[in-house]
Length: 66
Image (cartoon, rainbow, N blue to C red; front, side, top):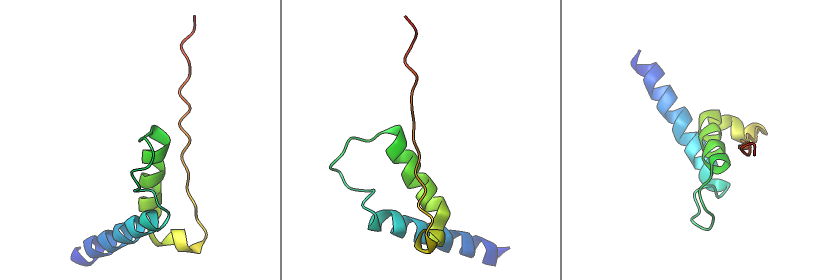
């Protein structure tokens, strides 16, 4: 049980490192749904990021009808 928790933490830390390497934590842009989603899925993808996985999230909010 403990080894599983350690592996999950290592997986997520590697995902955060990958997101950092891609510049997702820079303060140059406004935060958006797409930016936050991309950081989250990149973190969850973990070491798969270095195997070619490049997850992106697109948040298209519909306009209200008139």
